[in-house]
Length: 589
Image 1 (tube, rainbow, N blue to C red):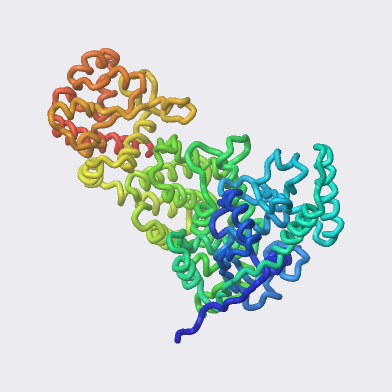
Image 2 (image 1 turned 90 degrees about the horizontal axis):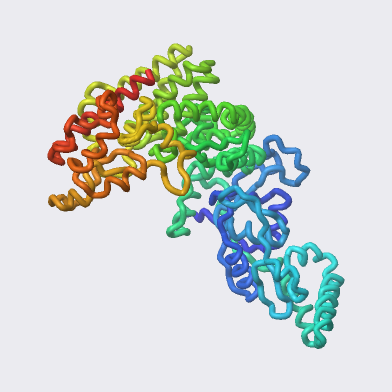
């Protein structure tokens, strides 16, 4: 029989809560924030009150020397200054019970802090989600946390509760019977006894590697979210540097809130995983999070040994790195680079990896090669434009970024940094790419085609006017330009209904990227389903004669396009769209 990687150990809920409070048992957010609804917590408590099983917890012993294991930057006076064990499975259940019994607020998946309030009726022995009605009702204990908070004086608390309920009953002209009083007393005692509820736990051996732990988690959670290296890195930060985890989450929260001085922007709402990827690439030159995780655990790659001292050194380094990554001014300066590349709206971003790794490159240029201002902004704008248009970080992003970082190890100067990135851009944006590859990439109907987004960004870079409008695309792509209705509409140059009338019925053919142009929504309503040769009679009058050539060039429209066969139109327009993207890049240069 194979060696067992786990040991079944029954624990009482009271012991589990105590281990969380004294620091021995870590409760990190492996599932990325609290996601349970309060009704689910209510049902969990109801099951426990009825003596039903609630499943097991999976605990991983992560520290070989818990007494020496210190939390970075921690002055906590606890028996365990860093957890000896971590909750791997059952985090939501234990978080729910801990929060309710100890009246602690939780942080949800949207980074909002809120309490979980569960009410208890000691006469009917029922749980409900706390609300104002329960708060006002004498027959309800609004927050069961107060019952556990008074456990040391439970006799006095229970008598007080019975008295309050009796007085409320008397106001209505009735009385509590002796049987009801005994029922209330017993039910509150039973509620308190939930602390003695036996929770089965599976303790995974401390020498089990993280890959095996992740595999165990996936195998026992059919259909659940697989754990990755980013989960384990966030766990390590939660365990050894809680303040750092809080800083990451606060930055991510502020990126979603439009307040002055925050990381908020119209382009990107980073997650903690994104911040980890940026930090590891910039600060540790590791794009593969597997290696980054081992670094933070304190592994010496020469001898394969893990060291507490080396781990502490890596976390000290992480503190310095995160201070730069989470600098709001630096972040906003990078966002301006992306906007200057024409990507002025979240709707134009097809690859978050391109944003993540381009931000890492920006930080490398700024802090490692001491670039700043216009030269760095110009370089990163071109870099992001290339990575976004080509899908550079789409196939194997970690591998590609790892290769970029490896190439940078021999670069010593800012000129060398510029030369390396310029060379990689030139290697991607070849003549063959613009003449052959890019037109072929535009030959599809995918709604999130990077080449199409590159074309839209190029229009913004070129300061092009919207087709059939005096306004510029950059103005109308901006989220600030849209109310309840988008300021821009994706218009079929050859309307779908018209194509159907001439026998083209497949949406893949009708929704070809080259058949689209952005126009103002009012113009889209005006055009309806007429043939282009018909509706252009009215629309062409809106284009000044001296601007027609420039507008047709920007919108990749062959002269007389409205009279072309549909297939010929698509072929010609793809070539012209590729030329617009090339002109947009050359403008960035």
